[in-house]
Image (cartoon, rainbow, N blue to C red; front, side, top):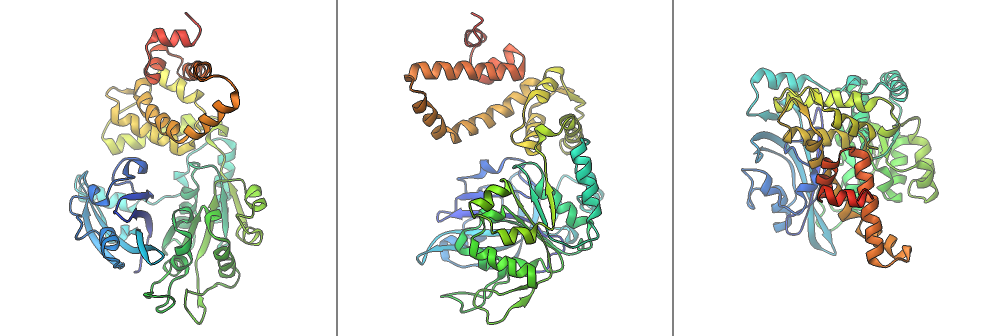
Length: 448
């Protein structure tokens, strides 16, 4: 498969065909969080997919692996998508326990068609590629980062990007690729944390027929990235054995597919990233020291949004303009209350959280400005997800407190009420967010 511009998603399903992992790359066809798709079948999200023609369902039901297939699909929200994919079975002790699918979209082949766009609009969108202008920010740290990025466009050295989740590591990697001398080659995105460890070596470097029982000839992602860029996200999730082979690929520009007798040349730029402090990863030996030193010829450390003074306002304006175009609305900005909330919120999910918050608000907002209540609906959902994921931690804190449950819960509820009110600075909005009456809120705040 030759891909001129390899935007890639990954989908993993279990043996029932239910989605266990779904990554969203540059194109979000469904306009929702990936988490909303978990536990559903991929056939639920396309009008023209069923048990008989879905490549993932075929893989889990029959064990057939389907490579280099092109399908014209229609999503449930009316988008026509031409999808190129490789679908592999996930096996354990000879039994199929799921399947993984790598999905590619080639803009230049007109593979993405929106039935609501005119031909001219579709052509204009395809011509637009991520560039330095898409890195939004005016704080000193971001201005220095953009200057540094511009300096490395003409070079081809490995790049290592660090930063918290949501700070824009993939965006930076795509900008480096699109503006560099390999821009005409493919960009291959690899989420190392999403690939089962026992499949990673074959997926990255390829498989030769006969290397193990029922093994078929498959090209690896390094081969697909030839003359382009491969972006290894969450590289610390890569097994140490595979990290050693990656080091060889970096130093000698050669890879050895599974079962191959000879090495093969590889010619791609490698960009890697992690969302944890490098020092901790090296100390815990999750990341090989020699590999890190070889990858970190050029280093970027993306600052969290809470450390980017003034950029919340800049990013808010940028995404309001962006979503006005997407949703066909004419929202002029935030209300005073919503603006105050944005300024005081610490944005633990960084730029991605801000973007998702505004997108959620655009679905609800009816006036010329986004109100605090529009934002509250979005944050209620995020808070519910956080609470569900933090149940074990909450129980641990309760046990460590030494208090009885009634006393502990009252203290926790009072602290939560104060935290929400301090952020929203509005009794009605805080009470609505917490799902309690204003009288109950005042009691929690010690005002009654």
